[in-house]
Amino acid sequence: MDPLDALREAGRIAAKVRDTTINEIKPGDKVIDICDVVNKRVAELGARMAFPTNVDINHVAAHYCSPINDKTVIPEGCIVKLDVGVHIDGYIADTAVSKCFNPEYEYLVEAAKAGLDAAIQTIRPGIQARLIGSAIENAIKSRGAQPISNLTGHKLARYIVHSPGYSIPNVGGFGNHTIMEGDIYAIEPFAVPKEADGMVTDGAPSNIYQMQKKRNVKGKAKTMMKFIQGEYMTLPFASRWVLHKFKGPDGVAAFKELLKSKVITSYPQLLERTRAVVAQAEHSVIVTEDGCEVTTA
Image 1 (cartoon, rainbow, N blue to C red):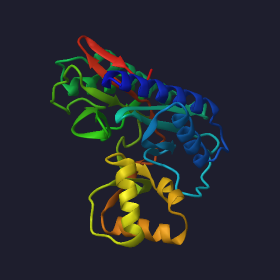
Image 2: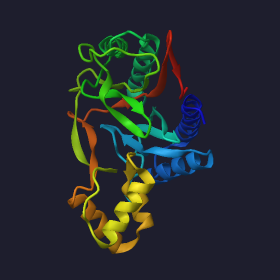
Image 3: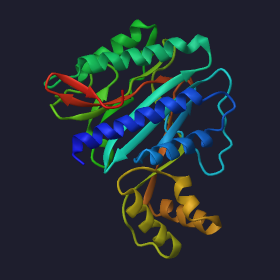
Image 4: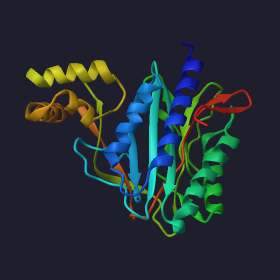
């Protein structure tokens, strides 16, 4: 498949799964069931996961993914973020949406959407990333909220969700690199109340992992390492995906050995520093001659 067609198809699938799933989410639902249904739907539509499904509740801004046997449920009165990453032959679409079960925080959902819309209207070849950040910041603040300043959108590359060195800031004053035609970005504003700190800090491990380096491990750990390398390559994966394949105490021990040996590393959960509730909106875009094409609309 042509790379642009693959990007568009990945975006179409990600958007369809995102919209279907977020509409179904309600208080009392198990987070692990939401994660699993996203995986199932993506596979049924002919794509693969580029990033484990994130279901982030209230002050968790990003990177909560269910471990095996997770008991976490969606609470009453929360904001929940659903973040879905999909790929076709390594060509990635990344998208997220928020759902609010408390009218008091609905303005945060609207603010995150407004920031995303402003970025989409602003991005074009030749513009500096910091100007997109300013547009996001102004739009979010105009809705009575503020952006999270130390989270950014990210460049997408084939089989690489977070391409190093390039980002789309959510505030002005950062990002002097110039946007180029043909660039592919995931733009993701996060909105919090004005009185919040507006920054995230690392929390507990997220149950999301990535292959770091092949090392000299033995036995089941070696078999698991080869499986991870062949199955996920440079893409992040969920611990429960691997532990469903390698069941029982031996599988858990092998996974711990890979972590201890730094064959794999963990993503931390990202928590708003003052534990304020967070809303998120995200689309993936292809930068075109005079603007951008949103693949996940």
